[in-house]
Amino acid sequence: MKVCFLGTGAMVPTKQRNVSSVLLEYEGEFILFDCGEGTQRQMNLAGYNRTKVSRVLITHWHGDHVSGLIGLIQTMGNIPEPGTLHIVGPVGTKQHMHHLVRAMSFDHRLNLDIVEVEGVRPEVVVETKRYVIRAAAVEHAISCLAFSFEEKDVRRFDVGKAAAHGVTPGPQMGRLQREQVITVGDKEVTLDMVTYLQRGRKVTYVMDTSVTDNAIRLAEDADVLICESTFLSSEHQDKAEEYGHLSAKDAAFIARSANAKKLVITHFSQRYFDTTPLLEEAQSIFSNTIAAYDFLELEVVRD
Image 1 (cartoon, rainbow, N blue to C red):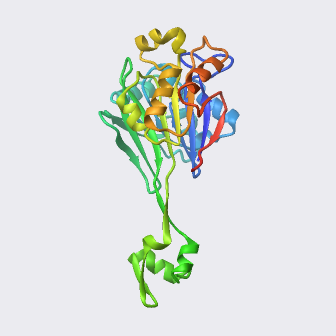
Image 2 (image 1 turned 120 degrees about the horizontal axis):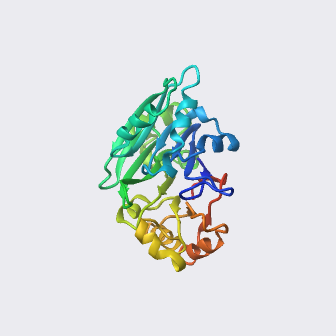
């Protein structure tokens, strides 16, 4: 599992930072959190195949988070078998997409599967054999969601424990997995006795919000919490509260309250050419914090 920060700026692109988009790569699947202006170009520069995006998770419909969608859709629809792009967003996403694809003239060949979410409380919005995606409403000027990508736990055989209980690899292990308990010699061996649970990894994405209970709930025990840090609290906490954004201090508070393992701050106001003050403010509350920059790649590892 890997995360690539395609854009780390807020509001407008600058020479230093593109606007919001984060790519999560999981077992060959590409999932985008937001799709700001220039996202597909950033993917190209970072070496990711733009036509392999399977899902786009939209936090809200402010332009700096969605204005790259139309270009991505056109590019993905320009291959021989374009398939389906799955889009999850807040209520109103279907109407926005309806207007978006009709605002320009092109051969619209890509199938769009659109799901709208209220997210009063954290809820599962996508589920596959290997992972779930949860969403929850947060507080911004317009309807806005936060997302959490959660790999499912997997039960693994402990070869040493299996050998100690006389369970051999192959058919015997297979039967134990199917039946949960087998007899080996004169004793019963259960699946729990020779296996362990491999904990799934979790990445949470929180953008454009005030501090909310939903953000904390969604980020609980996250391996990586990606969180907006638009302002420095010592200078502009009033602006953060006025516009429904987080300061570096707020982001760190969410990470600490959620018992996250690592915090990555992003979505920086253009007034901060150097993010060191934001990083230092967050680290004063939550030490395991790093500041994202465009094209930062981060492996998501287990403990």
